Image (cartoon, rainbow, N blue to C red; front, side):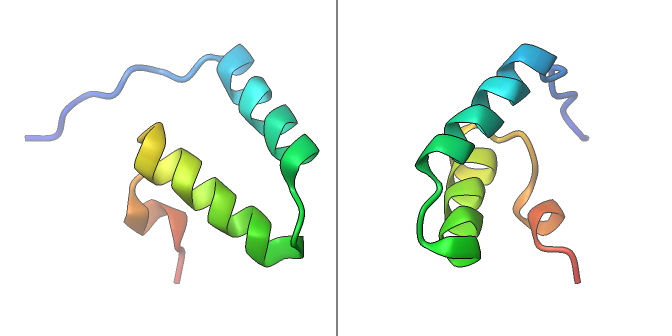
Length: 54
């Protein structure tokens, strides 16, 4: 069965994107790596398959 994930608040999402904007260095590859680590591995906001669209 699929577990229902709690909704992500707008404030939490904005806090993450603001943080990413301040620490994003290394170009797109660096940003993608940071987003994957934070969104998939740490916060579990999206799945690994949902992160990498074919």
